[in-house]
Length: 356
Image (tube, rainbow, N blue to C red; front, side, top):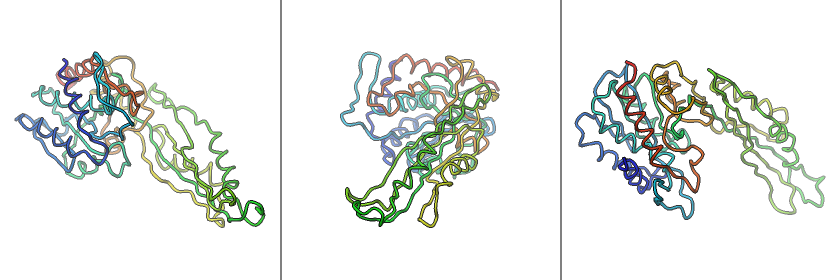
């Protein structure tokens, strides 16, 4: 089935960095349009293709069209059964599978909606799924499958994520006379130490371990080499288990920082971005069937995916795709024919044998 690798290469050759998905959306529409068993709808740079059937029993299969920015010098090339290039693992190999399934499986045992959407790799506010969910019933279904890279295994649900920034004030002064000022970086140090010393406990849900993580991801401050700084800040990212709500996660992170906050100095703690996670959903018949057919035991998705977007709308979801997640966004990102064909085979069989 070298056609899958050929199709992946075609998709990889189409530049589709976030906010620039017009050309690849054009390709998807033109690829699907000739097939009469599909109802194809385009909303901005998002494409939805639906087979006939009842939305209440429908399976939604989704993949994002965008990629992160290209690494300097990164080129598309083939080496035997390997295809290298931006987006090969995350996730244009999955898009190739979706296109083949949509066109080859004309009468799936359950109705299917294929969702190709924009802007997954940037802030959630920009996600093309927002446009699609705004159209009544367009992406309605009873269960969703995101073809995020999982190396052919099932990664169930996903962790939540948030980013909080803590900003600290001070007073400028000459470094030769620091007693005339207040050093914002020094004031920030205790809060930074409080956060950096935390190792969140892993959480086990339905036998799957969600490895929670708290990391400082940026630090800013400083004016010049001879000036006591009057402002400093740091940002933290918290990856939390899906059994924890976004509000609970935010309160916990704030509890680590706020004891060191002084409003009179202009200090402030701000939630920059956040989204809850998705529970594993392993009891859903479709997901359970996928687990039986896929390679290995299911694992927890420790990153955030749009499983959470579906879960918050009452639709259980999981992740399954051919790409290796360890290669996502890597300069040597690639996919191989064997895993590509294996993932396609599982999904093709699933759409023929899935529990009614």
